[in-house]
Length: 194
Image (cartoon, rainbow, N blue to C red; front, side):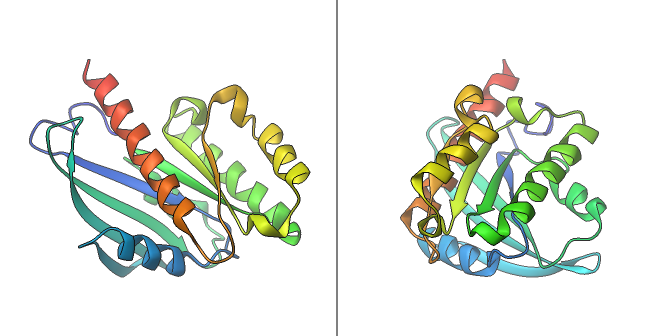
């Protein structure tokens, strides 16, 4: 997470990261979010050997009473090297953890959570004290009981981490998850300033 000095009064910016298993079509999510965030710019770039996505948008922040630059980052494809994810997570202000609820993707989704937690721990960050939101993708492919099992496994209720569900085709809940993450990240930056 950025230090309070890195987010000075002159630099109102949020860096948000999406962590997802390779089975999730991040390009589709980024396209939907860019479409829903009027004026957002979507870029594809290389980070080491992997394709990375970046969406940039500007909006007015009632919390800061100023314009806020938001950049959203994600890695596309198989990630065999955790160092690239750590580069992406460095100086992040919040994470959207996207879980694939397709039953055959359970292990890959758990791996994503574990690797994200480890990457943050190496940077001295505790996931329970960091702005994070979970998005259960393809939630229609599982049962309500299994969704509750995931919630308990991830201790979402205990840690008060918000969770949203979306269908195979990303929907309005994806946007709601992003808005919740932006709100949490802004609140964390506001608390750091005091």
